[in-house]
Image 1 (cartoon, rainbow, N blue to C red):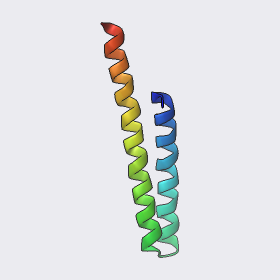
Image 2 (image 1 turned 135 degrees about the vertical axis):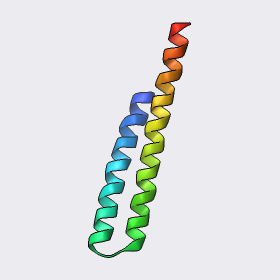
Image 3 (image 1 turned 90 degrees about the vertical axis):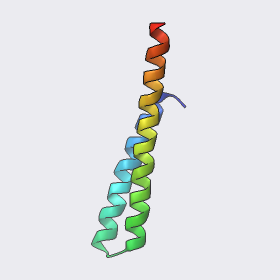
Image 4 (image 1 turned 45 degrees about the horizontal axis):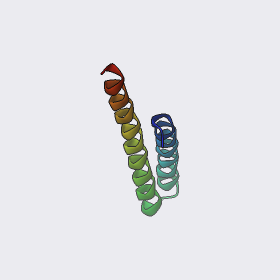
Length: 63
């Protein structure tokens, strides 16, 4: 998977996770809030992987 797709999927997971958390809060569902928090964390990790791939590619390109 490329860095751009990692960042896009990461952003999508973050947004979906935040929405799940808000829905869980609205309906008082700790389970839904926890799922949302997990999905948001997954998204942040995916975005970090994408940024790391960009950094490695940039370093290799400078060599």
